[in-house]
Structure formats: structure tokens, C-alpha cells
Length: 158
Image (cartoon, rainbow, N blue to C red; front, side, top):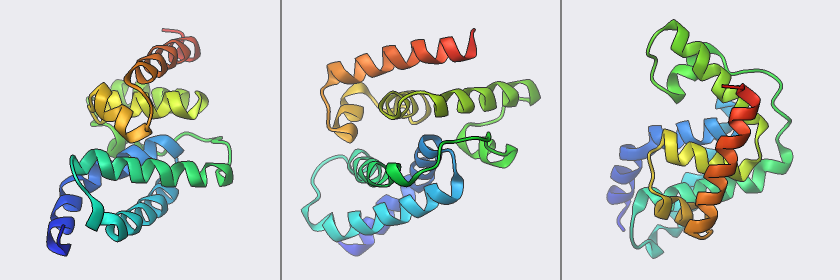
């Protein structure tokens, strides 16, 4: 992969990458730091890249997130309105409150469940693509989605 190809591919999915990382860690500044680290790692390894670039880049970013997770403080505050807008599109004031509630609930569930849910519902990746990003089986992805949805229902009490 040439430098120009790499830049073109990154431009096509950098917004989604940032939204994914912000959803995982609940901190836009930290998400930007992890994204930058992931892009450097991906660029260095881009000579060996074969396949779906977006899924590969998300896997690199997820690995960077996991490497940094021990350093993350427990989320104590919800994201501000601007960050909520960047994570999911706004459908009105009431919807924005529901989305913020969802983001707070996501921060309270285990990281692997949160990752599967964010990739499936926010980034619209297939179960197979999520399995590739998280380096787990498709069955395990389905399990995390199911358990994660149940945890979210308990937290939000729909």
C-alpha cells in the first residue's frame, strides 16, 4: 500500500474511527490520542496490509485501546452535548437525552460487550467484521451482543 493509498483510506473512515474510540472510552481527547497512536501503528504496518482496510484499522485501534485501558479512569461524567452529536446523529432534543443516557449506560458495561455493541449498532459492522476487529469468533461476538443488550436494558430499564 502506498502512502497516498493509506491517506485516502484513512480519510474515508477517520470520522467513524474517532466515533468508535470516543464511544469506547467516553473521552474525546483520549479517543483522539488513541486514534493517533493507531494511525501511526497502522501506517508502519501498512506494507503488510491485505483485505478490508476499515476492519483492519479498527482492529489496530481496538488493540491500542486495550493497551491503554488500564490507564483509563472510570467514567464519572457523561459526554457533553457536542461529543454526543459527534457520536450519533441528532434527531431532536428528547432523542439527544436518550442517546446521552445510552452513552452513560455503555460506559458501565464490560469493555468487550461495549465494543461489540458500538461496532454493530454505531458503526454498522457485520458480526464477521466485528470478530475480525476483536480477534474473536463470530459466536463470541453474538454472545457479547446478547449479553451487552441485556446489561443495557437493566441499566436503562426500558
